[in-house]
Length: 242
Image (tube, rainbow, N blue to C red):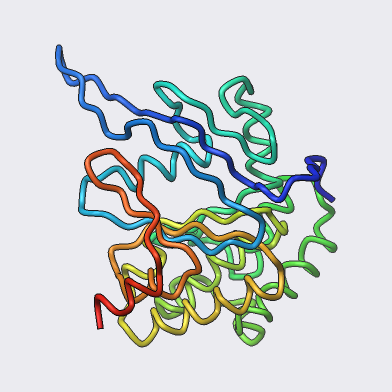
């Protein structure tokens, strides 16, 4: 059970966040005065051109990088004032991460990979495996529990990565191009799975994508351009892109 509770519907709150990188004597501004809120159960796509700062923003939301200015709160907790141990605990309990490449551990099977966040948390092995089995069944892999990553297809490996991100029942899952390495048919299956899991579990999803077909299936679209964030109307985007 989570130790982080809040009466607010907001899962992530970003207030006037900026990110500036130093390149020699020059300063490069990637994000400039970005503010938005992710509410419980939201499915949010972050879109923008290559180099627009999408992955940088995702790292700030996950506490993997620090803002140059501004504030990111996760369930009301200011990430900037937490030490590394506190951040690690918060991430383990309340955030899941999925990347374009699955990052599964090759020496472990699907069940062991999925159970890893629970084992790290200190859950007993038997209970962790029960919960991991349940999540793998939810993503359609009940017959692949004991297959290692090398024995799974690309789509199956990504399903395991999603199961691993969801197994601890986090408040939000952050995804960086989760379907970018998959063919269109498999990508659509993964997207349909995410919609189904969002409805079942009320977990928020924030995904960076270059694919407007995937973006338009979320209930919110945020576009990064020149360091600024604009919220688009998904219905208008559908009309504009079909």
